[in-house]
Amino acid sequence: MSTTVVTPQESTVKLSVQHHQQCCGTDVSKKQRGLNREWIEANCRSVDIKEATELLRYPARSGGIAIEGANGQSQLTVRLF
Image (cartoon, rainbow, N blue to C red):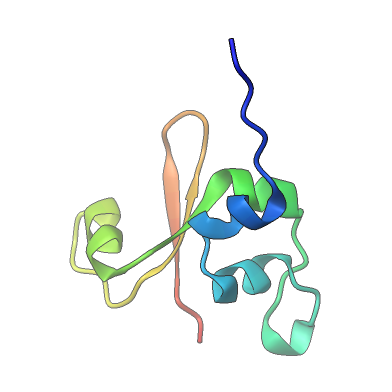
C-alpha cells in the first residue's frame, strides 16, 4: 500500500485562489472567514455555473464553493463577489 502526500499548494487546486482566500483568510472587510485551512481543503471545491446547476438541480445564477461531506451530502455557497 502506498501513501500519497499532498502539499498545501497541491491541495488548494480544488479551490480557486479567490475562494481559498474567502474561506481561510482573516480580513473581515474582504468577507474572509478565517476557517480551518485543512478542513476547507479536504471538503470544499470551486464549481462553475454548470456544476452548480447539477448540484442544485435547477439553473444556478453563478458558480461558487461546494462543501461536500463524507456522507455524500453537499451544500453550495454562491459567489459573493
